[in-house]
Amino acid sequence: MSTASTQRLHIGQLLAQLTRLFQTELFERLVAAGLEDARVSHTHVTAYIKAEGSRLTELASQARMTLPAMSELVDDLERLGIVERRPDPSDGRAKLICLTKAGWEAMRTARRIIAEIEAEYADHVGSERFEDAAQTLNALLAALTATKGGPSKAE
Amino acid sequence: MSTASTQRLHIGQLLAQLTRLFQTELFERLVAAGLEDARVSHTHVTAYIKAEGSRLTELASQARMTLPAMSELVDDLERLGIVERRPDPSDGRAKLICLTKAGWEAMRTARRIIAEIEAEYADHVGSERFEDAAQTLNALLAALTATKGGPSKAE
DNA sequence: ATCGAGAACTTAGGCCACCTAAGCTTAGGT
DNA sequence: ACCTAAGCTTAGGTGGCCTAAGTTCTCGAT
Image (cartoon, rainbow over all chains, first blue to last red):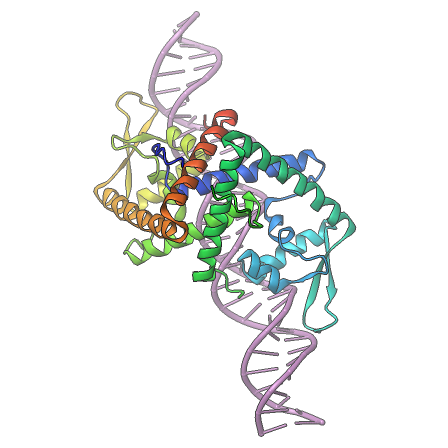
């Protein structure tokens, strides 16, 4: 029970600053790992894309962004050879966004790096404490998205 | 000890999504409270500004942004009548960014709203658990900024 | 069978929040 | 009196979103 209330920043500042630090860190390491064209926003695709392919609508909804924003992202990833758009056999309007071979490779690299960063974070505050905090954030996010559905128009 | 490991998103996603939700929420409530010109980025000033006034350099460094970025922000807040730039009596090059009367008023409103949001978050996951998580994040942020100093050029 | 509502996606255009590079003014040691 | 450096601003550019307005296709109702 670590309610040893030190004065702290408010939750918004904590979240925003940590987000920024994490993203900068991830980005730098991706570049260092040879993924020079990687950008932080690409994670909005790679975080949710399914092995069989995902529809744009799905991705946009999960990433809580609008369709055009997601479409641009996919354009970018397609240019980089990470994903490709295939016609969806079950619906002529839709397309399936699929990872390419290079895409899978990049995913593995990214996941490894993310795991490294998480491990370092855990070292800084204690791994049990870190995991508890992560679980709490996860629960909070679930609760918030349940009640509000998120800011996205792509529901 | 809530190490009841549910599958969870990775820390970067948790942070980023919660940040986004928090900021959207805060922004909406500020608008609802009559601060129609409020923007999320204004918090980078209001979070750190001192009662006696702060220098631009200080603010930029604490908010981890570049001087020009902070300068623009202050421009904006000055236009809105929230802060004003005064010459720093102790250094002719510097200026003190000070809150105006309207600025203090807005700050009070914002703080109230932030406290409300925090309270709601605490309700969602349990207030002790929430506070523990916040303390952990605070400690993590402190540890990270200690070792890396942050991405800012304005140190 | 065809027609209209609506779903899936794209295109066009815009805004905000940053950034880097390059200036300008004042401070302060030598 | 310099020269370097500090404090700040201006100029210009980019990424990451957004809204609005298309296009193409689906599917249920007539």
